[in-house]
Length: 169
Ligand code: S3P
Image (cartoon, rainbow, N blue to C red):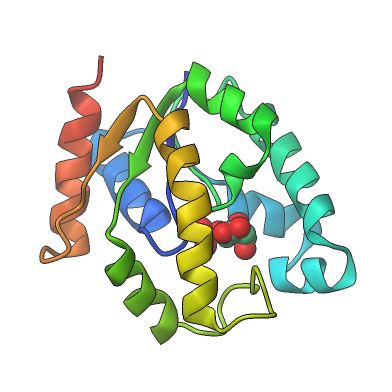
C-alpha cells in the first residue's frame, strides 16, 4: 500500500517526500513528474487542452500506482476529483499542513512556475480562495497530518517526516 503525500501547492510534498524516502530506503514517485514524462509540460498542456483533461489524466496516473509500495507525492489539486479522494482514503495518506501565510509567501516568490488556477483574480486572492475550498478536502482525504516546522530546514523536516512515517499504524 503506498504512502501518499497531499497538500497545497508549495507545501513541500516533493521536496520532503523525496528526502524522507531516501532516509527510509523506500521507492519514491512524483505524480507530476510522471505526468510530464507522459504528456509534457503541465502549463503547456493546460493552455492547449484544459484543466478537466489534466484532472482525468492525473486520476488515471494515480490509479496506476495503487500497488506501489513506497512514497508518492501528488499535485495540489489531486483532491478535486471524488474518485481520487476515495483512493486517498483507502491508502496511507498524509496531509502536509503548512499555514496559509507561508504558502502565499512561497508561491508569490515563485510566480510563474505553476499554471494559474483562476486568471480572473490576482495571485494572492487565487491562493486564498483555493486554500479555503481545498482545506476541508485535504483534511477529509487524509488519515494522518504532518506539520512541518517552517523554521527548520528541508533536511530537518524530512528527517521528522521519515520518523512520522515509521510510526504510522
Ligand atoms: C496543481 C498543482 C501542481 C500540478 C498542477 C495542478 C493544483 O502540483 O499538479 O499544476 O491544482 O494545485 P504541485 O502541488 O506540486 O505544485
